[in-house]
Image (cartoon, rainbow, N blue to C red; front, side, top):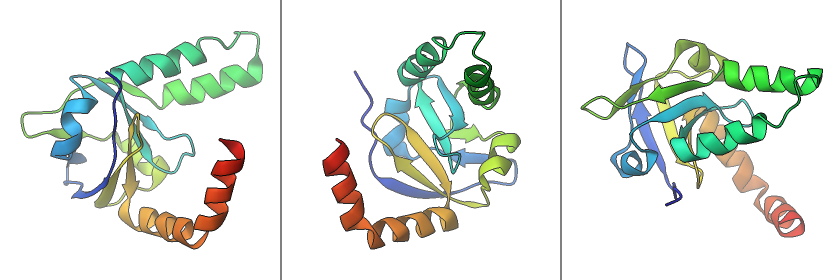
Length: 147
């Protein structure tokens, strides 16, 4: 069964770098998941095992002689933390390295992205959401033209 993540949820990071996964997202995330950067390097991404396997399969198609491709693979895999599990309270530890890369502060927003979850810094997400609202007609036209 493919994941179907939707909605946005606000949560706070604790002093140890942990955050509670919203209850409505926990079951679909599964027993083990990967924490990585999102495709734009603007937020963290939580990938269920099945989705992460798809990403790895795509990355494994890059030939070792493709220097530029291997640089991309190295960056993605070097910033991915696999085998994560929630504790009994539904908390996960967000690696400091990744928190720094995307500028996470205490206030976070979880965003369901259909097949994965993004974790945004709340202020950055609010700004991005406002930009999307202001450009909504253009975004819609882009989607209709491309997809």
